[in-house]
Length: 445
Ligand SMILES: Cc1cc2nc3c(=O)[nH]c(=O)nc-3n(C[C@H](O)[C@H](O)[C@H](O)COP(=O)(O)OP(=O)(O)OC[C@H]3O[C@@H](n4cnc5c(N)ncnc54)[C@H](O)[C@@H]3O)c2cc1C
View 1 (cartoon, rainbow, N blue to C red):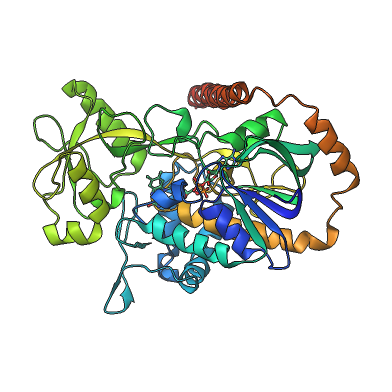
View 2: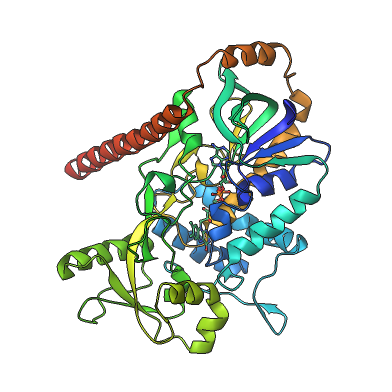
């Protein structure tokens, strides 16, 4: 592996891959990932990706996003995301991504919190379609190298300037990797939870290194719980039952087979209703029924969900399935501006690991793939613009490399445990602080 590169990107999800593709081909780019390249949450996305269909929908789309986010969103970020959506979808189409069409025209679906259909999809494997095509494109580029099973464990940084990262390669060797620009695209925090829809290796490593180096974070108390994951007694990742199933007509039942909530309310509201109902029923799940969706529509739009449920012993065309809320998405993260810049020079954060306030306190369904792509593209363009001011990685970076190699990275198991604990503690600390602030605001009227 090259020890020096122009841009190092941590993560092969939609954000990391799109960023690499939007950088000039004159740049030498290294992408690393902890696991196989296709093992990212981006590959798991089922429901779809939002797009602004016409100017007429701008205000409603904006309002839906703000309302789902409890109006704690950054309005500029929301506007940029929505206004950039058409351009991003056109780029995806140019990369060969296929979305559902009828008579040649794109088909739009709806999910919880959306006042009208504006979500493009590919069966119920939209994330695999998008991210798989991005990965294919990246593999064709001569200027981009991908290293799998290579884990970032620290940043090479001094005086609030980032000079690259420290990684453990696939042979277990600790390496300094110098870069003029570093992009953290290392996803969410599901691996910190017992019940999560995320890959278990996504443990908020970007957040941990940010905490260690005093890089600003934002909204880390905002963790989204998805209302409907397939209940199972088996250990491991929980299988998501996409919101678009409810968007297409699926309904929730309590133990007495009675409806108890409007299934199309935002995620946090439906989650709270399910949790309350589970307590009242004394059961670890509630029921989800697809009886209102025609069998051929289930098989066409949700073949993956149909198959997975069948493997668990449920035929969704004939019977209800047990569902339970599970950790799903991290709205908070490393504070970033509209160009993905963090509080540390030459360090960018994009995708789920970053936070520019676009989702506020709660993400609207199908906004995250879009957000990942929009701001990863902007970060890439910003890096290209900064080309002229690039610092040399020589001098300070070389001496830093020596400094960092003298650091003790030998007990890697402990380092990973400590990092997880650091992130958990920060989330809890911020949750308490937020609750106290909320109580104070209520008291002060
Ligand atoms: C089941 C499921 C369904 C979803 N459905 C939708 C949907 O329909 N629509 C939508 O918009 N969003 C959906 N989402 C959310 C969306 O998929 C993610 O938020 C988004 O794809 C995040 O992309 P990302 O590139 O930031 O992170 P990821 O795709 O998670 O990629 C993170 C990458 O970072 C790597 N990494 C992490 N730590 C390190 C480290 N220390 N060193 C090296 N590499 C590291 C990982 O290996 C991985 O390659 C869904 C999520 C899940 C889990």
